[in-house]
Amino acid sequence: MNSFAQINVGEFLEKEYKNIREKYIQKSKNDSVKKKYIELYIGKGKKENNMFRIADGYQMQYLLSEKKATKYLDSILEINGDSENNFSFYAHVQKGLHYYEKRNYIKALEHYIKSAKIVEKIDDKSEFLDLKFKIAVAKMNHNLKEEASMDFLEFYTNCKKEKDYDWLEKKSLSNLAKVFLSLKKTDSAKIYQDVWVHKFYTKSTNEEKFNSLIRWAEYFYQKENYQSSLDSLNKALKMFHEDTSLKSNDEQDLYYLLYLNHAKIYNNKDVKFLLKSDSIISSEGWSINQNSLRIYPLLVDYYKNHDTDRNINEQIKFTGELIKYDSVIDVNNKSIVNQLKKFYLDNHNSEKEKLEQEVSKAKSQKNILEIITVLLLVSGFGLFFRKKFKFQKKKVERKIEKKVIKEVKKESKKETKRTIRNLENGLSENYVLETLEKLNQFEKSKNFIKKKYTLQILAKELETNSTYLSKIINQEKGESFSNYINNLKISYITEKLEKDSKFRNYTIKALAEEAGFNTTQSFTKAFEKKHQKSILDFIEKLENS
Image 1: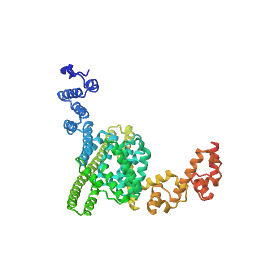
Image 2: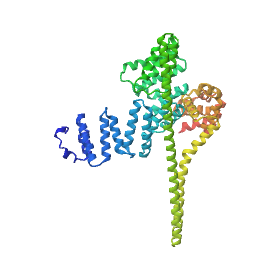
Image 3: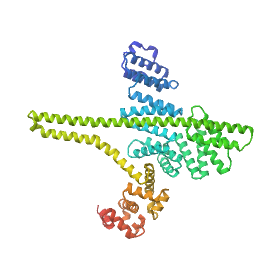
Image 4: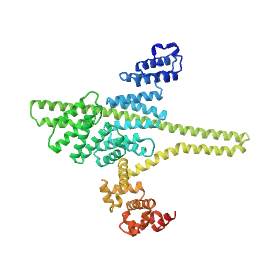
């Protein structure tokens, strides 16, 4: 079957594409023979002017080849022209990944944006989310960290509501930790880092584990726990040396943090770490970002304090590097921002156009029904059809409301009101989401039963402002702070009573203490308020059920 020399090319080209694909290309174990079959497959497509099969053939060549990979992607795009189909989408995604691996984030983003425009039309939710995520990463790497953090929070929140999106939840958590560390929001970073470790660490790749260690090192350094930071870095360094195939964009951060921690712990400014970081940044294909600049003032300062002719030259060299890279980053950032602005403006205009078309279409349907109704009335059928078309007219009007007003109302009004309310309260959406996540962690910890919480104590524990915390609880939880705490305690003891019958034998005083109430009176009052029945009646009902 795979002996290419025995193939009669004329007869071979008469076979169906599916037959060639499945019986020859896919079953061939010899790559050079497989390439020849693919060339014939593409030749057949060209002969028959079948653009779909030509693109399919180029895609197979791309997957089989390494050296000429991008050439085949370009061929797919050339064949498809302006067509927005699966092949064009695939080629742009792969080119984006190619440039991303080469750390050319501007070119990568260019192809990701083109992919995102196509994927909306071919309606692939998973791919669309993945592309939006890649765009958020581009924001994070190019000084749009606040915007990126909001995007990652949105991904993480949506992932918890959807099935089969663990892959996106995993990436969102790690990047939330990373972006919050870069924004010096260490406690927020730790929340997401803890969740990532608990949920995903054991099933992560070496690269992901390495990056996690770098995030821990950054966290501990910001918390001034230098020894723990250094321990994490040493583990990462060991992992890097043991796995030669390991590649990570965080490698430069490893050596930068080693320098900082050695300076803090041993009072030893070991320049070799900075030089190693510089060699990584200067290597071919490495794309620099704002973090890359951190080492150069330290290098200039180091050589400034060592007064020799060589060191003066080093000062000049690294000052030049700083100026050069700062200029490159500035250009890159502007380019990224401009691409993103155009992408979001195009999206906005596209959505606006769709909405206008829906309104126009619905209005046309409404007008046509009105005309038909009049004609039927004139022709003598009016009495019979009047009610029927009146009903149809109302049905169309309801359709207008469902398709236009309801969609806008449901998706936009709620968010708009919430945003306006937050702004009126002096709260950013990002801050509200962060605080809600912290409250979620607090609720899971069950700490509310261990000690008496006041608004001030909880605010201090969550590292936030008591006034803002009160507003968020009122706004998002729909209750006062005291009711919020009491309801958590009552929900806790209710679950105990429902699941474990031994609690039903407790005295009311014992149950109150278990739930964290100071007095029996406050416990029974809070219980009756939540369940609209006394604790004794509640237990009796459980026993009889």
